[in-house]
Each structure stands twice: as structure tokens, then as C-alpha cells.
Amino acid sequence: MSDEARVGIVLVSHSAALAEGTAEVAGQIGGGGVIIAPAGGTDEGGIGTSIARVRRAVQAAGTSAGVVILPDLGSSVLTVRALLAEEDFPGPVALADAPFVEGAVAATVTAAAGGDVKAVLQAAEEARHARKL
Amino acid sequence: MPGSCEAAITLTGDLHARPAGSLAVTAARFQSVVELSVGASMADAKSVLAVMGLGATRGQQITVRAVGPDAAEAVAAMIGILAEATPVGG
Image 1 (cartoon, rainbow over the protein chains, first blue to last red):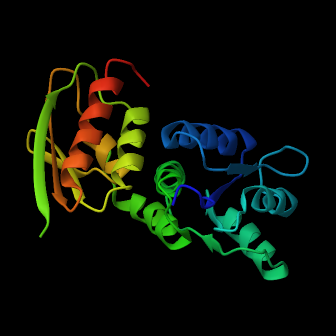
Image 2: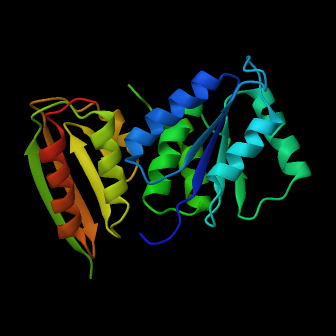
Image 3: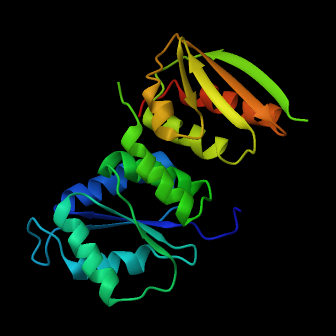
């Protein structure tokens, strides 16, 4: 298990700072070993999403094990779907319906433990049910 | 036939996010079911969010219970992380 590639994580947000900060937190909790690529903001660096930034992030995080993409809010989903409709990536790609921070942390930990795309996607989506109080 | 194992440790610091991540990543490497409990709360050690949700703090006793073929090794690994990680924050 330890010799195999880990599933990569892509964080798509309307804000570059939100995507980068969430990647930083998830990376620290996951203990390293997982590629987490943030894709936040527009091409000009404003608030919004960019298909080009998401494409670069998927290319950066994608391994032979695949990649799980977490969008923050509505139009992030549209941007990811537009990309996936127009382009094929070499490994499996999954889009997670999950809370952004909790999902990113849970997905990263599961990827760090060697989980496959299905397991990482499930961990992200189960984050919806986790209580913090 | 699966074995079972249990051990407890008193936390010398609060259980923060990083050690919670370390516990979950490590627990996931064992075949056994691994649970952490503090008072009446229990968490699947393989779920980082559940472990953080325990809200375990300094001075509390945390019990590690594992059932499965590698239960003893899993409990030892969890206790090792809990002993090492809790005095430091983050």
C-alpha cells in the first residue's frame, strides 16, 4: 500500500485564499504524502472560479490512483462539470458533494492512508454527517 | 477468530487536529475495527472528523478498543500517538 500512488485532492473555491488555506490545513492534518492542489479565484485573481485554474490543479494533483475534486459552492460545481465534459484525464476523477473544509480534511486523511478514489470520495461525502460539537 | 484489545491513557494535553489526523491515518492501516472513547462519547478512530469531534481535553482518560486480527498492534499504535502527541498544541 505504501508504495502505491495516493489519490490527489483538488480544492475548487471562489477565493484563492480559501482554497490555499484549506489545502494548508488539510495537508497538516493529513501529515503530508498527499498532493492537494488549490484552484481558487478567477484568472485575474478575483472572486470567482476559473476553468483554467481547475484544469491545472487536476493535472497537478492527478496521480495514477486518481483525483477527488471538492467544490465550495454552486458555480464551482458548474466550472468543474464544464471541465470534465470537455476534457479526459488519465486517471479516475470524482466530484465530491461535501462540506468544503471538513470534506477536504477527511478526504486527505483517507488518501494518506492509501484509500482509493471511491474511499476518498466516500470519506469526503460522509463529512456532511460529522458533528463538531 | 478475531482478537480484541483495550488500553487507556490519560491525556497530558488537548487532542488537537494534527494528532487526530495521525490517529486516523494510522488506524486506517489496520484491519481491526478501532474505537476511541472518552466518557460517554465514542469515535471510529479511522474517521478524523469523529476523532476531532470527541473534543478530548487534557486530564481526560481516553480508551482505545480494537477488535480484529491485528487488534493488539492497533491499540499499541494508537496509545503511542496519544502519549506522544497530546502535550503539543495544533
